[in-house]
Image (cartoon, rainbow, N blue to C red; front, side, top):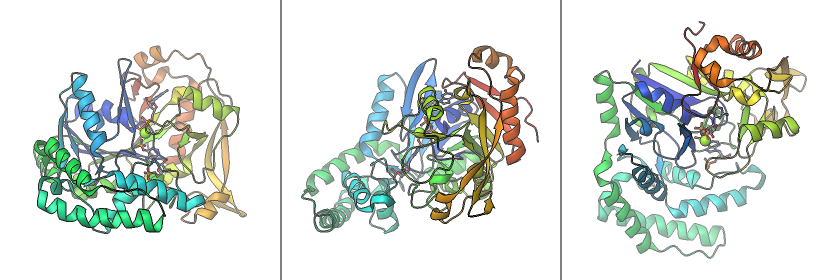
Length: 431
Ligand code: GDP
Ligand code: IMO
Ligand code: MG
């Protein structure tokens, strides 16, 4: 299975980082295909926690890691991540696409100003400049990594872009923030020098790797409901988070993708604004947030949490052609009784089992739940991990079985703790 996409099936933070690190054991390369430093992917190995915003999660396995053209690169974050890894004794084998775009500080300023202007329509962004950077890319104002290696081109592009941004900041938003063209140019050139040996045509390298029969993991950021086209617009992000984004964001054809793995949390979480039909604003919600440590990896914001909602998961399976699901954070639900799973919505006298495009309709959707007996709080997960799937509490197996029955996709792996080793691989997923 050489080309494998790992995609979030919900609102992000499904534990794609953990899953990517786990599966990277048997891969040769890992490539990020979308998003930027808005992503926060956590990997825990032998009790030690690593957080990645830009560097693919396979880096701790010593694999070749790539940042694809679909990513927007924040220089400060990338330098920080690389230097931290080096300090920890790692030797990251990283390559960056010459076609990836650069996030500047003025994008972050603009991000905050846009959110302020949007009021109720704001997505509650990470303020990492993601929307403005992708807007500039699409409007063909953007600066690509390749531009950082050519002073003349960079200067002419930045001259135009910075003058334009200055006008937007002062004249549109009425803010008295001064952008220093020379400082911005110098910093960009310095970053270009820092990464010059890492810049390459990632599409060519990944296609060559696939030709050689190597296994490549395409690591998605965010989740399907945050996708620019198929997500809950406008309460999402600005990139193609879905599996199809892997082709665009790396430069491989659809035939290069052999398998799509959907990562699904055993409940839902959402950081940011917008409707969440199964949100829990009660003690059960507080308990899930505390036990699951549901606080943003990038912003530290408390995440909204709720019962597992299978409507977005089914939608996600369709949009991404998901072959198998990995269920994460099952341990977090221990001791909650009963448990609920949303299987469809009721809205204005009608039943829905998919995500509507009309966000006002989605806002009115009421979940229809199936209630399930929970399992005890005092589960010995260590023993279960050792013994395997069959050792799971019978109620937990039932929970997983109900999911499979509704979504009609097999669950191949179950994660029951943040650490790499707290993972159960199911021997024969049911088909
Ligand atoms: P990502 O953005 O999809 O990579 O997910 P995040 O890293 O933002 O959030 C997932 C969080 O859950 C991280 O803090 C992980 O360390 C943690 N985590 C991952 N898998 C499990 C699990 O099975 N159980 C528990 N309790 N925590 C987990
Ligand atoms: P990972 O990869 C969860 C959310 C923000 C906001 C919306 C737009 O860790 O799963 P942006 O900064 O992208 O313009 O914000 O998307 N968001 C995420 N939520 N996980 C993420 O990434 C996210 N990246 C962005 O909270 O609602
Ligand atoms: Mg995250």
